Structures are given as C-alpha cells and as structure tokens.
Amino acid sequence: MSHLLVVVLLFFSSFCSVSSHQYYVSDDCSSVTHTLCHFFSEYAGDMSRYNNSIFYFIGTSDINDDVNMTAVRNVTLHGLDQACLISSRSDRRSILIYNSSHVVFSNMSIYNLGVIAQSSNNITITNTLFNGTKAIMTWISIKLNNAFDVKVSSLVFIYYDVVITYEPLAVCSTELPHYSLILANVTSLTHNYFSLYIHHGTS
Image (cartoon, rainbow, N blue to C red; front, side, top):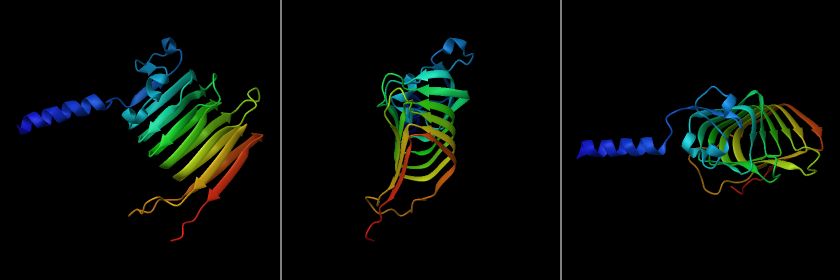
C-alpha cells in the first residue's frame, strides 16, 4: 500500500509541475533553434507552474492579456539582445505579481505594459526600458504594494507612473519582512511620476 501511495504521489507531482527550467519566448519561434520556444501567451495565464525557471525572450513578444504571476517562486524574465515585451493592442494590460518571491526582470524593453506587485518579496528589475509611448498619451503604472526587498537599477522610464506603497500588514507574522528598497541609476526621461507612501500601524 505504501509503495502504491508513493507512485501515485510521484505521478501527481510530475503532472502538476514542469520539469524543465529554461524556456525561450518569441513571436517568431521558427527562427529560434531551441526546442522549447512558444508565444508568451502559452505561459502567461498561470506562471505558478513554472517555478525555478528562466524565460529567455528573443525578438518581439506581443502581449494582449494580463500576465498572472501568483504564488511564483524563482522566476526570471530575461531579454536576449534587449528583447521587447510589448502590449500593442491595449494600454490596460499588466504583469500581476501576487504572493510571490524572487522574481527578476532583466535586459528588457517593455512597451505599454504595467507591472503590479503586491504582498511579494525579493523583486528585482534591472537594465530595462519602460516606454509608455507618446502616441497612446496615457501613463502606464508600475505599482508596488507591500513588496519587500525590492531592487531597481539601471532603468529608463518614459510616460510611466511609479507608485510604491507600504501599508500595515493585515495579520501579525513571526518573521518580520525586510523593507529594503534600492533604487540605483534610474532615469526619468519624459512625463513620469514617482511616489512613495509609507503608512504606519498603531502598534
């Protein structure tokens, strides 16, 4: 009976998780020699299945739906040759990060795509361009709400709002969160808005 239970658990684990840890993303996978290449929409609906993974972006990836990063662990989105992650059909799409940890964005050019991180920790964004584009004439937002241990470096913003908020935690925790916020080499070129709000509790 115990052997059967082990087999069933192993099968269930392999079915619910993805064994490979490197994926290639492009709208033109025919030019990509790597076998694991798909549109980003293949992964974006539920990225919690891809913990401990690196997504390499090649060329252009057109995003027309929200990217759901709920309860993800150790996920990196990295652009090869400053790849573009674009939301061209809507200016209301976002990368939604909730209850996640160790999420990295690096070497990307992101157009018209918001980033919302809430109740998460160890978020790193580096060497990335965020461009809201003047043609749309609206400001895309990067919102960090109770995102702890955040590192932002070597970024350029154009037509983006950046709002960072810390609020009292809803419940007491035995482990205090690390409130580290590092901003380094951040360039604001055109019509950007930066704000930081810290709300203290009564105890």
